[in-house]
Image 1 (cartoon, one colour):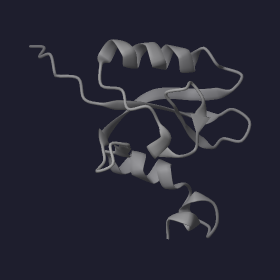
Image 2 (cartoon, one colour):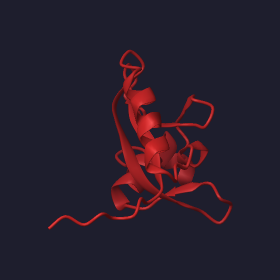
Image 3 (cartoon, helix red, strand yellow):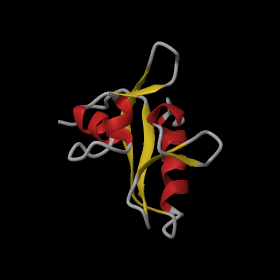
Image 4 (cartoon, rainbow, N blue to C red):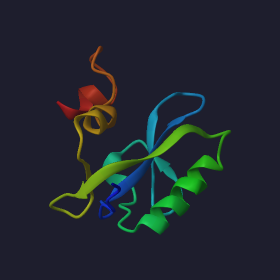
Length: 103
């Protein structure tokens, strides 16, 4: 039995091809390392269109996918799942980069 679940908000995320950094697709179509700068997608069709845009940039990013997100107190997207929160803060095995900046 298949149930149609309501669409939950998403962001498009990927990794930069050369650097490997986690990035998020912004409303302007740019890539940002800041999760809160991502475009919060609230409609399935628009989310799929934005994912297709990301997948059409194989020389720039790899592994693009839609990640669950929710609007934060300021309306900007926040990660829902632990994995995405971890990706947003960067590697935890050294004291520099995004993980260090959060502290």
